[in-house]
Image (tube, rainbow, N blue to C red; front, side):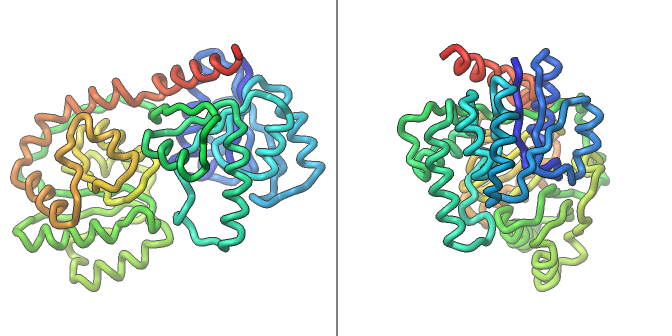
Length: 361
């Protein structure tokens, strides 16, 4: 089976890392897999080269590139594969895939509405074209039931075959450690600093937590467009000595191991890989009820860590500060749950079945 994954770039991001690890898992299963990139610029590029997975250049210069020569070249390249698997939308790539008549899978990792600022005309034009294309693929796959429900409504998906395949993650052996008695209670966040991540809600909840008697510190790992805004907010609340903003780090495993619990305040996440990572380290994660697909990871094992508002969030933080022994007791269950349901190998097999089903049509 020859499969081509199409990505914008090998830049740091949940989708990029997911697709690369997915392709590696496919290669291990004997699938002839390649990756097509619009640009080679990105932190994962060297890692991708090390995997000896063929990398193709799409020639696409942006989301609104309409170069006819590129279109013809893409059609020719796509015809060399049995499956073209798209992970993001561009007009040129989509048109080329459709007219190549190769079996096409589109994985929708989340909806872009209200995620980034853009001109209204461009947004509506792109969504109109995307609606047309998504309704013509061989199968559309969503990374959560939440994402699929949104996509069905937004793109009026009525006749196209759809399916939900939850994301997987590359697993490693994690051994949960009990926290020393003299260890300061530590709440952690690992995230990009973007509007959707709603880090302001976590800052407010932590402030309320302190006001009801909570102790300890909050460590924020990550960077992004909202970093300075959050920094000003922390200063305005007088929490500089209690909230540490350490920026982007590559050794996130050291931070995960140091955290007692994980906090993630985002809304409308397509999936929320951070929840799986938290469980793999044996740590509970607290989220809001509007967290989207992230709830689907947490609900089966710790539904009480899904809260409605900042006041409830603060109380949940306080619960864990007062019951720190409970964190370690449940850690092995969290790890076992994550390994059983969210391995990259399970995800690869689920997609393989989807590939087979459309090739047999």
